[in-house]
Figure 1 (cartoon, rainbow, N blue to C red):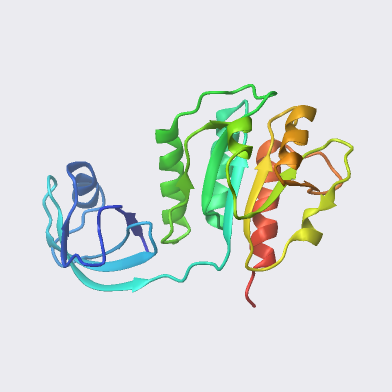
Figure 2: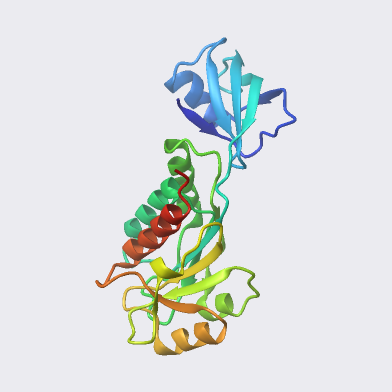
Length: 236
């Protein structure tokens, strides 16, 4: 099944028309004609089955045949991850985390961050492609980039963790995780969080954790955390 994404379609729609760029892709590239079936999601859990009514490269119109709401996992995972020096590594994290299952991502700028500017438009495209590839109907939310200090000083209702490599009294994430938790996990940059940042996070009720016995790259640590949460919540 090929999945299309359009955030503007809602469960109340009976017909829907695509913008010019998407219409051209459907009709010119994929060679869809009137009567062909499309599967569309709005990224909010809905899967629509639609039939092409007007196969026009400027305005492809479809009629909604049926709709279903995809079940969402019963936990919420928010990863706050420092941008990596090499942008493609962060993009790899975004792609794989979307495939595994993540709800929101916040890029955080830390004391040791080498990259402090990101291109959210590019990241959004990565998330969209990964969502469609994995046939998920839930689009992860990409939050605005924020400083570490401003992030940890927010009000949270989640269970809070900070993964770091300093010789503090750290707990194992594996031992701390429980099913159906809402979690926010901090993952630092190359060079790790600074001592000042770790102390500030702990002061703000973040629990220091370790992700294993080896030192992991930023993007690897984020994926380990993401998979650990998904595995803990796996329904057999």
